[in-house]
Length: 122
Image 1 (cartoon, rainbow, N blue to C red):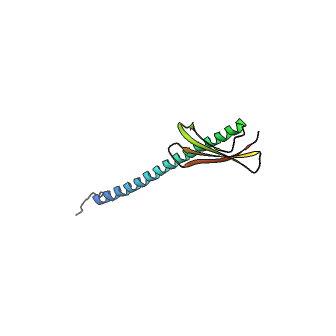
Image 2: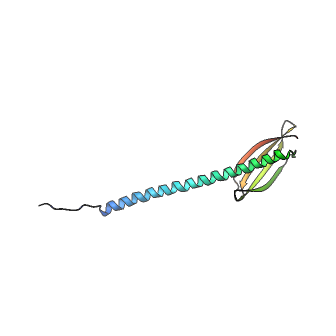
Image 3: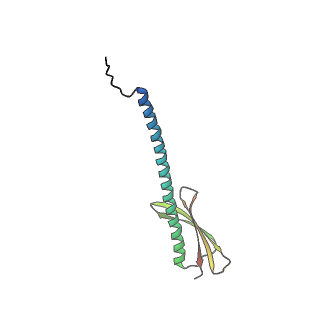
């Protein structure tokens, strides 16, 4: 006599499979969140560097001879406000000035971009 039994998954097998899937989805979500954070950070750093480059280009285009001091201000880019700080310093060459530009987000204290350039006496 032959007994025909349909075999399916047991409740324990289904629960183990669901646990494995839940762990995998958790890892995927954590990786996705980290990727989003990295992308946002890179975007902020790129925008901050553009602000710094614009500040340096503006100084070079003005062809002014800035005094050796520190200036601060804000610029808008990418729908946000950015704080910049320019430090102009003398160099051993009397016809050159060193300018260091730092850019921060208005909400944070971390420097997102730092650019150093030189200005020649006009």
